[in-house]
Length: 139
Ligand code: THU
Image (cartoon, rainbow, N blue to C red; front, side, top):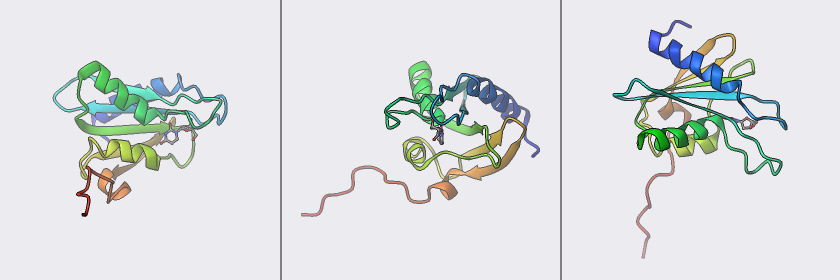
């Protein structure tokens, strides 16, 4: 699909990050790139698997952690996720919940594979009702 220059740049960086994916168990390699607001930097992440399986960290959560370390904030403009699948996948439910801490419903999330960017989706459509803030405990 047609995208802006900056989305294309993030896509290329996500593909580079994907090359560093550590996925010896699933062979499912994922790269993610976050464009942060008011900042030229694009922050990337790749998945990092573990023999326990459960301790695996997805590419999206890796990128979020990296953004916090590097910039002290995670104010998204958009997110690109690159997988080695067809069709391309988007963030899993666990990552969507982590994203909900920082993402607004209109946050664009691009699903891509090594060949192309396949779709533009909105966070609010992927996770319409995230668990958010500590609800009031009923007495
Ligand atoms: N994975 C991601 O990195 N992001 C997602 O949104 C979906 C899943 C990774 C985790 C694991 O290493 C592999 O893909 C298979 O689930």
